[in-house]
Length: 229
Image 1 (cartoon, one colour):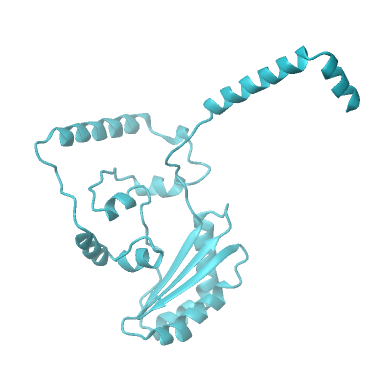
Image 2 (cartoon, one colour; image 1 turned 180 degrees about the horizontal axis):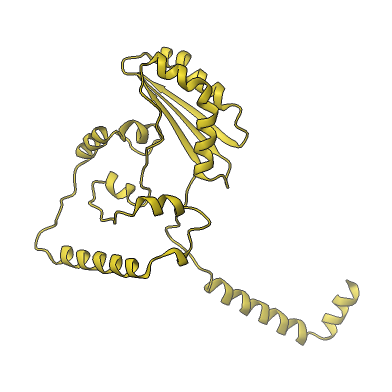
């Protein structure tokens, strides 16, 4: 190390040139670094929601929440877990370790709950379990502010098979569909922007609240803290 330092002091031009070159390359690399202001991120979180209208919070805790929490305790890749209990509702928010796919997380929870599922269904006269529940994080914030949003309805079979997976690469895109989608969105946006009156008004906080209750999203988004009545 002393020899290198001594050599650099006696021959300062080479270290200075090397420093300038590395600095230049670093600046160029930083400028060309791709940045996505709205990255498409799937958080490995599973929500278990069990409803029993009219049941007291203490009953929901002892007869439902504790049983569910005990059944999912065997899952090894859980990062954090929270339970929120209100009158007639149990919300258990399960956050998995980063890198766990949503499909894997849902499967793990469903398999862990299988031993108690039949008993819960029988005790509460339920007809079955479902994992059909979603919240579109791309347009959700706009909708919760009452702002109308435009979206394309994807082909569900292909969408669910590829979305948020390593196989979701550009070669899967149908060029004809992509061009048609771009043309439709561009045309609709242009026509809407050129209208003398807005095609839809911005709805109030109260109206959004009523809409969430009608669609069944109210309890879910409230428990997560995303919606504040």
